[in-house]
Length: 522
Image 1 (cartoon, helix red, strand yellow):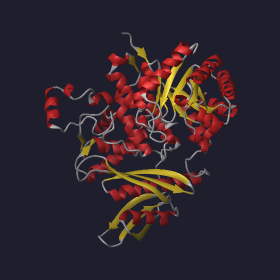
Image 2 (cartoon, rainbow, N blue to C red; image 1 turned 120 degrees about the vertical axis):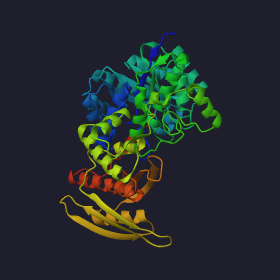
Image 3 (cartoon, rainbow, N blue to C red; image 1 turned 60 degrees about the horizontal axis):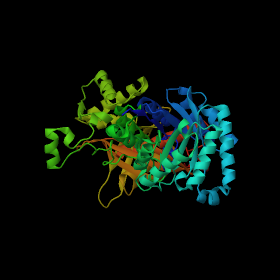
Image 4 (cartoon, rainbow, N blue to C red; image 1 turned 90 degrees about the vertical axis):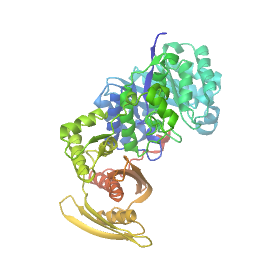
């Protein structure tokens, strides 16, 4: 059986970012875009340029780097949106305009308040305008899975006639089931003229936990592009998980007879990068990239594995980029060994990031006897050339006892090199430390979420802290790592404060939240 190619359309930077708490800075988006290019995704949907100036800037910056994948931007069916997408993506050699409009009865009546004919005219006009600017145009009928089949076929037919080169069928609210979705795609294949001349795409949400299954059902019925996100992040319950759907196609190649261009050995480092940047930790039992994905504890499983790995493993850890090595480096390891280990773990750092990560590694080696892969990954997750001052945490002292107030004393260095030492009391050590940071820097934050995870195993394991805060009505997120969990929390909190202060110096608005239209979903 001949093997066909299937396109992987990654929307981590657009739909994935719409998950609550997952908004990213420009630098973070660029890091993820570079990782996606190294992963060899076919299309990167870099954002919704009309949503905000920041979104436009990010899409344009990603397109201008021109690293290989097609760069796509999302637009509603109106001229201003389409013009902004083109202005943002045109710097890439391969670029795409993606337009959408809702088609289901419930959306027509309650959201758009438009008749069927009006929606078709809107779609045709938008596609025609986009084709005048760009040869590669995608169209999505939002909430397609709840749209009447005959009307959906009419809309898709009109879209193809107007010049759409890709037509995407979204299960916008995660409502469909595999057998039903299979019938929908087969109906379109049988009832839409010209459908074999375009790329048929699928975009599924995971509200009922079936986004990957529904996407694979669509593929079996003729879809040749899958829209997905790293770790399945996205609005509500999330999207089809890229790593799961890609490995399903690869592992069951004899069934699907399809292959992607994805370098699967980049899946795990890319998943870790996205988790670190968004603060959305990977569940231990997450398929493909979770900590337990290749763990075997039951005695009968371990016995089988000792005889042959295929008894209980349908994939090898190395297939997805998980290193078999655990203990890797110590305090006497040099820069070359460190750089080699980073490369083997699947991460690509520039010279600045490598030097900074190595400095952090040497500091950690003085505090921790054994350095594991997870420790190296935790360091890399927090390497960002934008994370410097104006404030630097020099030292931290905490006194805490049961049924007593905790005391935190912090020594901070400002941008002029002056040291400031302050102390605060609170119900717990983390709260006390946060109080010192606020009083010293003059930035008062509202803590919305605080998460702490262990990077590795053992009593001296690094703690990875993630804080989500609100400042002037806008949301910020910060990360920090340390073998001292209070210090990790302080570093995360201080990262947010420094970001706010740097943005204030540049005269930028606070926060990263886009306008309400960024919540538009397909």
